Amino acid sequence: MNRLTQTPKEFSEAELQEIISLYQAGKATRELGEMFKVSKNTIGRLLKEQGVEITRSKAQAKLNAKKAISMYEDGFTSTQIAKQLGVGAQTILRCLKNHGVTIKSRWDYEQK
Image 1 (cartoon, one colour):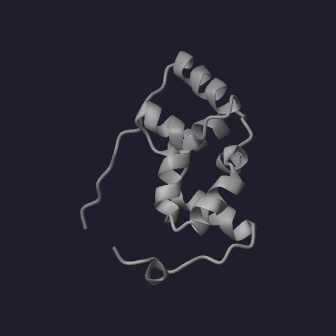
Image 2 (spheres, rainbow, N blue to C red; image 1 turned 60 degrees about the vertical axis):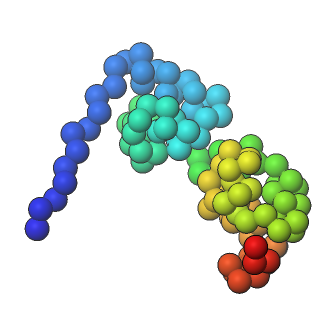
């Protein structure tokens, strides 16, 4: 079996400080990963290595739950809501579940 390997990206001290600063200012690991062209897991690992406490709720904290619930009840999918609110679809689903909203199956939406 042939495994693909990827050389880890090296970050300068200035880049590390920028990542830490942006994370502490509210940027999610996903957003930082996109900015620095690495995975969110790489960002999380770097932050942990630098002694930064990682929270799983950054996206939840900045999410307007009322708006997400309203959009979902209006027939938007979690993916559509996520794109509009700038978070991942799983964040939307987690938010909806945490607020007691019954999650629809794909067949519950009107066919276009």
